[in-house]
Amino acid sequence: MPSLIPLLQSSTMPVLIGLAALQAVFLLWLWYEHNEIKRLNGRIKRLVESSAGQDLAALLERFHDLGSIKKVLDRLQEKTTDLQVGLEKSLSRVGLIRFNAFPDTGSDLSFALALLSHEGNGFILTSLYARDETRIFIKPVQGGRATHRLSQEEERALAIALGLAVPEKAVS
Image (cartoon, rainbow, N blue to C red):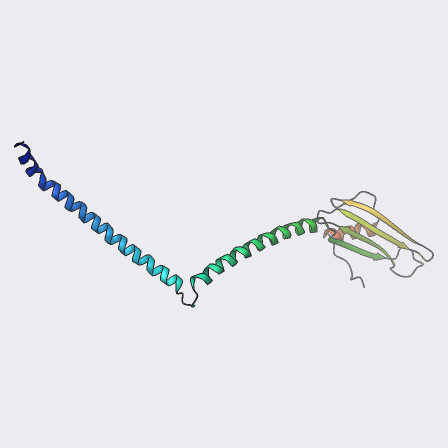
């Protein structure tokens, strides 16, 4: 064993230096973590004691309210989408022409009314007024085109409904 003691004495100094270096690294790490905890504590304190005088519970309540508002907004978005689909299929395009179908009536009591959806589907309702009778016709429209032959007045009402023509005068 006598040969082991000089060996231990000669390697003790590097081991001690290594341990001292490791201890210095741990002390630096501990100092860094202490400063990080102080910084986070300061942030938490500022959060709890905000300038408006609100506490953390009130702030968390606001976040909860925002979640509720988001749910309501999502439901409103779904309903809006449903309404938009419904509106595209509803009769939203209108074209109306009043005219005098027979010279002996003396007034514009006859009319052609085009009622179309956003896609151009719908119908044209035509009423021909005479002194002793009134006749009413309805003609289907698909994709902005009539499936039956149209009169000039019906063509004009269809063009107005499609946005291709402007009414000549306001209907009263």
